[in-house]
Length: 398
Ligand code: GDP
Ligand code: MG
Image (cartoon, rainbow, N blue to C red; front, side, top):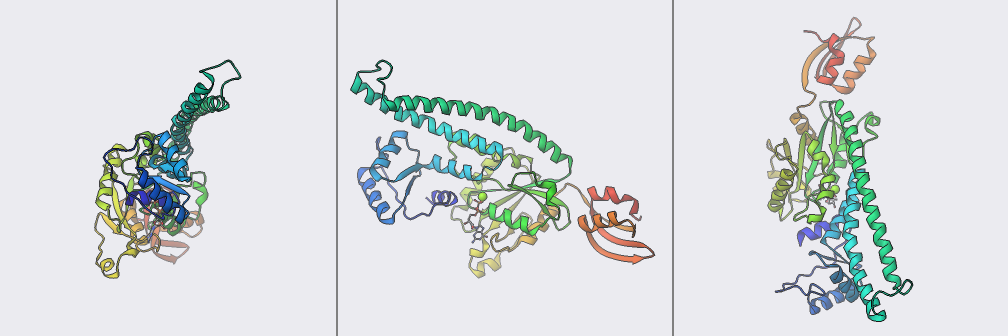
């Protein structure tokens, strides 16, 4: 139930009540029993709830029967997760995959209503009559089904197209030696909050370079002045419904490309170890289990002061509060230290003062420890990324 609550919150819901039923066998018509249904109806009415979420898959007819009984919209776990994916899918491919999953979810539900419609038509008119005697529901249904099937085919073609263009874009991006850091972890761990905090902390002077990328990827400047791309991802979910695996994966492509994974979890979560196991499982499925990673324990602001003071970072773990900005500069330093790309070297340089471009490049893209001015030269002691060093090589002193 804790997980369902988190998922519901992620989808933007306010939880006003929770119910559990233990039953030998599910009721074929309504999943839960009649008494429980009435209890929920009463509670929903008094809390003015406008949505009931079942942590169990509902058949199309069960869903309809419960809705009729409760007079409130009813969704199941799959629908809830689809909704969360739809909110998170910001890449074109992710959006297409989610829409595909939504349509595939919808199709049998239309069929369900269709069976009912043709049965009604059947009892009333003795089976399929001549043209014009079929129920309006059935005609409409067939049109809807055809439309949806057509849309599904159309989306499948688009997915292929988008995959190709994305691969091209990625190759172009990879031509520049910029590493990607992906935020992964369970839903509600605080990934998106951390993403925003990190991208605000590492303000970049020329965001135009990356302006065409999708909004779940942003450039961040590390303390070494190297740039990295940080990628926010959709949260992992325990027991992901089978039908959603493809759309889930499509939203996680950046994880496979990443040089470093930040595995974010909520320190206050009562089911932390279970979630860690799930994260491992998903990373294995994505063949990303061997990537360098850093554990980020988030929401330390919620811990009592004494416990918070006792926390210590180690080589694999940092503690932060994404919302309060606690531990963020330490985290940026750690990311910096773990990245192999665009290796840093400490050098001494003598740059003629008239070399304005080289000086600006060093000030903007290297960490300068000291600078001295003498006879038209600037002497610098700096830590310089490989990509910058190539451009200022003539000024390096040996
Ligand atoms: P995501 O699902 O991993 O992207 O998680 P979100 O970033 O959407 O955050 C989930 C919830 O946790 C939101 O209500 C955030 O406001 C909250 N949250 C995130 N980081 C922190 C934090 O450091 N402290 C506290 N107290 N709440 C946080
Ligand atoms: Mg998020």
